[in-house]
Image (tube, rainbow, N blue to C red; front, side, top):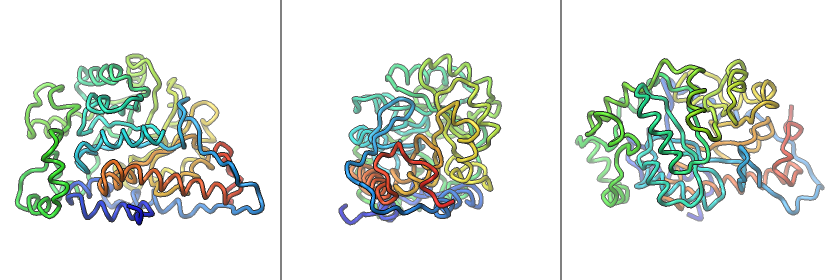
Length: 378
């Protein structure tokens, strides 16, 4: 672990340890993957100002996100099928985030359930909600998150229709994996992953199985999931969800200034500038490329967060300099989880923290809350 120095190091380790079907799920985008690539590449176009002979002592990365204290302005993003990267993955990632002092966001499409994660954590985590056609199921999810004392609801807005992801289709993605000969061979050469999965009972979407009507086996779960994302989702739905939830609400999936202005009028506590990790509209701009424009439009009305393409602490700092009050990492913590379980998630957070702290200092600042556009070459 001591020689895994970058997020890419964790990625390569995860590639060796996680079956191809699930590694590809984490490491892919939709269609040509142009937006997926742009999310990372556009960070490289932003240059930092190096400053010298300034006091770099007593630095602080402590901040807040929607009023919650965080050790650094980074949260673990909601990611589906996390528990297939490593056995009990959501539970382990939530524990690592809690110990590190940053928020963990559980996906509706998680392998471990809301109740599973609540059973192994002491502090409230966040829950991400997909709006399904089955409104009774949605209401039940919200109530379960409230019962688990989740401190924020993250409502995803950009998955009304599921975009085509070629790798998932070619791999026949399912959780648990279908026992085809290629899958059996692929898993057999990864005995550590297999042993972990044999030891756990959590191998399917436990927020759904046993809670949604008519979902009792893998085939019914797959068909239900494909049919359930609601293409009729509208701004009117935000209001009844906000009323039912009654707590802090974050809207995820804003990529356009006009949508940001509408989102700011909903009474939500924050928006997340995000293109779903490049997994929805291929050809859309990167999250970082539209962040500044959205901050200028609504940053004085609603807290603006950013998700997509972050692979280093330097990327975090660039997003903060452009006005984000918080950032999210999805793939980086998934790579860590696949590479080494809970310790790998902690390692991913440590890598981000160290790079963020050192870059902050070399840019001549001591407090992360002082990050601003004057730290960038314009």
